[in-house]
Image (cartoon, rainbow, N blue to C red):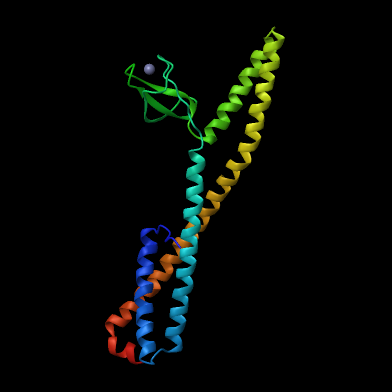
Length: 214
Ligand SMILES: [Zn+2]
């Protein structure tokens, strides 16, 4: 199984746990493993398993989130030459409506521009909602029946996409919220257990003979 990415406090704790499990192995070989040592080793193993499970879960959630963030394909075109072949993405910017959009440079026309659609699904939902509203307002005064029908068709399609997109985004938001809560719990647990192990280690360093022999 692929090792999950670990945060600094998690790596630190695992290093400490390794120290104690090596010591437990040595004591076992010497036949000196007391119930107290066994208990400590078990607690270490449990926490390590919990920590790896949490880190693996975190990797999966963040990976999914990143893929979701990148599902929008711009299909951007240069506003001057209307082509896409010489475009280079230069970054992103927040528009005055609060949407994050990609910025491009057309190397043919030597201009930079901001693409007129958001680069992520969360802002895309807001964009589509606003766009649908504008269309509906325009259709209220539109005389051409054909245009009205075509636009209403387009609106149905957009609403369809929106109703599929919204629950996916909601689920991801909930997942990330739950992850953050779990993250705080784990940080607290790691902090407490690390302090406990550090104290145990100091005891060993201070009274090596006594600790090894009891
Ligand atoms: Zn151009």
